[in-house]
Amino acid sequence: MQLMATFNRYRDDHGTTITKNLEGDSGDEFLKTLRATIRCLNDPKKYFEKVLRNSIRRVGTDEDALTRVIVTRAEKDLKDIKELYYKRNSVPLDQAVAKDTSGDYKALLLTLLGKE
Image (cartoon, one colour):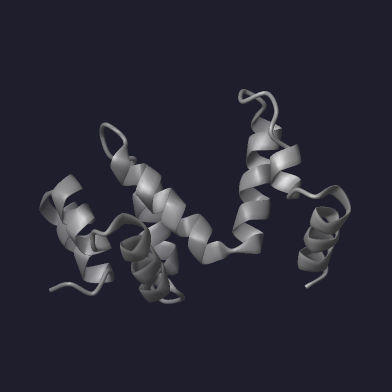
């Protein structure tokens, strides 16, 4: 709650979010990690939906990111993330995963997503 209050106060004082002001050198790993951390703290569902979208949308699937989000969020809020994914992309997450993966890996991810 303290971090949320701090981020809100920053936005009120500066007229922009702290993540916008942290945008700088795209090669700066520290700033990149800090922005990702703040985004995840502010709205975890939105952050994880974006990670999923980026892991599937690129040429070649980012299997590490895709697996990490689905496995770690399966028992927490994956249902909400799936709904947000559908709202933002007009494609069900399980359909996007099925299209981008294959074999046992595909079966595992679809099982975790609730598809038989």
